[in-house]
Each structure stands twice: as structure tokens, then as C-alpha cells.
Amino acid sequence: MSNIKKNIEEIMRKLPDDVLLVAVTKHRSIEEIEKVLEAGIFDLGENRVQEFREKQEVLPQNIRWHIIGHLQKNKVKYVVGKVFLIHSVDSVELARAIDKESKKKELTTDILIQLNVSGEESKFGLDPNQLDQFLEDISALGNIRIKGLMTIAPNTKNIEDLKDIFTTTRAIYDKIKENVNGVTNIEMTYLSMGMTNDFDVAVESGSNMVRIGSGLFE
Image (cartoon, rainbow, N blue to C red; front, side, top):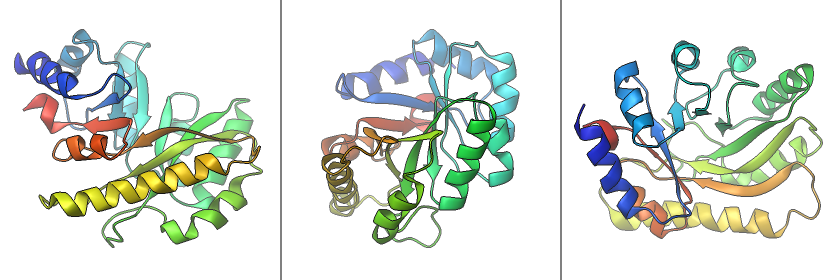
């Protein structure tokens, strides 16, 4: 556990000041997470809603929680109003469910659209070719705010393949940012891409938010 602080310091040295580190705490103990907080990292990412709920109840209230895993519509009520950002919105139905719950609680929920740029069948995410229609379909939802995009790259050591995924996602992000045209619920702020094994390539390609788990704890 004593390595956590050192691991975080090493990773932070590699990240530009404008890149936000989200510590992925999936399957990590409260004691391990407290070490992350002691190192000054308060953005924590969870994959599973149940695990998020258990940890959120006992950990400090100043944590900014991120839901980074696939979110089922029937679990939306457990996260709306309690998380800083939902990274994994990939369907109109899920967006509507978040909007409906947010309206019920009289608040606005910030979300990222998850894109499956690699086209891998094993990964969740919206096909980039469906993005324009998706944005049109949810542009009228008044209780969600689209804050950017998220993608997960293939598990590969091929740097060129990774660069291709990340630069393609960045280009899509920039295009949306340039063409928002007064749509009130779209603000391109975060480009969430890059994990332990590829965050350096992601940052070089324009990411400003990385999700790192094993690199902090091992």
C-alpha cells in the first residue's frame, strides 16, 4: 500500500497540468482508497453501481465520483445526484432515463458519450456513425448536460493502432465542439481516454482526462 503515493507521484509527473486523473477504484479496499485521497486525488471512478454505493456511504463527501462502467437503466436512480460525471452513456434510452431521474430530483446530470471507435464487439459504446442522430435525439433533454466523449482503446501494444483510435476520437470531439451552434445541453469539456497501459499515447493524442487503476495500486 505504501507504493500508492509513489505511483501517483510518478504518473502525475507524466501528465500535463490540464489533464485530470481519475483514479479507478474498482475492487480496491477502503484503506487503499484512503491512500489515494491522502495523495491529493479526489476524482474516483467506479465501474459497478453497487460498489460505488457501498464506498460512497463510508468515504468522505468531498470525493468527485465518476461512473465509468456500463450503466443499466434500472440503476440510474442510484447514481443521479451523487456523481460528478457519468462517462458511459451510449444509448438514447439511457440518456432519457438519466434525464427523467434528474428532472425528478430537480437537477442536471453531467454525462459523457461513450464511443466505440475501435468497432470491437466486446466493447460498449455508440458507433461514431450514429453520433449525429444521437445528439439530435437528446438535444432537447433539459436535465442532462453532455460534457464530452469517452472511449476505450483495444488492449494492444501497437502504438499506431492506439494513436489511430485516440486521434479519431479527438477529431470527433473537436468537430462537435466547433458545431454546437447554441445547443444548450452540449458543452465539450472532457475527452476521457487513456488507461494504465496507454494513457501516455492518449494524452499525446489530445486526451484531457485519464482513467488509471492498476497503475496506481500495483
